Picture (spheres, rainbow, N blue to C red):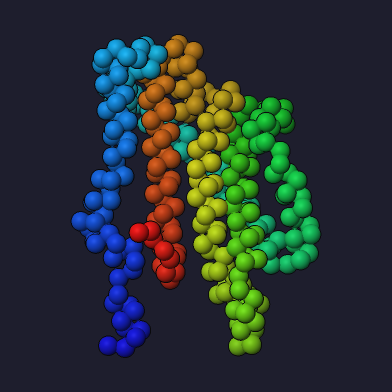
Length: 276
């Protein structure tokens, strides 16, 4: 067997550590230990009267409320609206960040025109602009989507810019010596080299999109998880409040799993340290 064939046949470090499906199952169990412990402690405290369920609810009451909201269609409808808002804002922010980050990273002129302005704007707290967005764009969907887009923009831009600038100059010079065009160098050297850092930015932005969604849906929303949460707050409906919080947590887990899947898909060529 040749060295190349042996390399292909050898399992990745992550696969070797996980030991295949049994290892994956064991890792899943270990990841669930802390959440299960916290939920059990919460339920025990609620059942024993240590905490007031009227203020803190309980896992059983929260789960029951989740089922009720799902069965009557309230949760699915509002969840779909929230996911659409987050997806639109995330898509707009990430697309803009990719374009500007690559331009600023590739060309000195792009850096001079783009980077200094972005560095100034990113010091402004995004969520402090909610009132300004309402004045400019009203109470419709546009300010909500733009707020999410702006929050998601900066992590991707900063990581794309750093990723492009961090590519080994020797690889670029080697590609030029091999007669590659500028576009081929960008496509086959710079962009793959910047991919690990870009995915780090995406991971941050996916998480921030959920946080920005919560803030955006306080802008006079009449639908969505934020609207459901604010309505429950007005009526001191802690069961619904905790149900919405749980849904937000599940959204965060879902986007993290999605980004991890993207990393496995696009970084299959990179042998990285997977922990001991």
